[in-house]
Image (tube, rainbow, N blue to C red; front, side, top):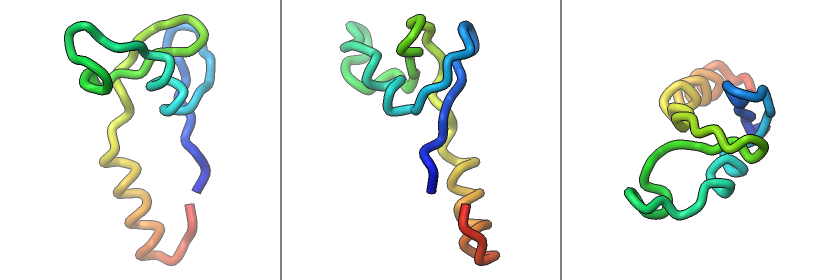
Length: 69
């Protein structure tokens, strides 16, 4: 399965969720990994992390229909 990419809403840069999570430093309010946001590695704009449920449903449908995603 290919790594899904995100597109920054502000500058249009495409990056992986892992890149967005690692570009975020330790948050003083929530600590490491507690805010469920990703930060664009290019411009620093913060966005909500992508929901996991749609991807899980797509994987399940692909598995049940015998198609690889």
